[in-house]
Structures are given as C-alpha cells and as structure tokens.
Image (cartoon, rainbow, N blue to C red; front, side, top):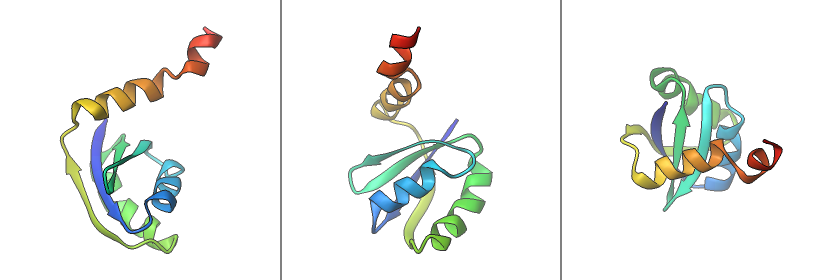
Length: 88
C-alpha cells in the first residue's frame, strides 16, 4: 500500500472519517498529523479531500510520504492484532 500524510485541525474526527473511507487500510496519529495507509495513492489523493470536507473537516495538507519504521510497525500490529492471534 501507499502512505499519506494528512494534517487537519481535528485529528480524532479526521481519523474516524478516514478509517471508514473506501480504500483506506489504516489511519494513525503521528505527532500533529495522521499517517494514512491506502490501497491506491492516486485515488485517495483525488477523493479524500472532498470526503473530509463533506464531514466538515478542513485539512491543511494531504500528500504522499515514504513510510517510516514506526509506520511499518503500526501496519504489522494492525494486521495481526492480539485478537487475531488468539483465534488462530
């Protein structure tokens, strides 16, 4: 997947809106912004700004970024969380 940096005033509301958006795999707070893992970067960059505006959220910045080590860890933990391990 691809990773986007999203800067909005209300990170909690933005994260909730993004987590339910089509094509979004994960959204996590990273400092004063969100790191959002998406399945299709071009589609997400085209669609997410209007989706966030429709929720009353104005974002200062949405751009593609390279994943950090922490991003990779968050994605791995999210994909294989504790509940999933217990079920296996």
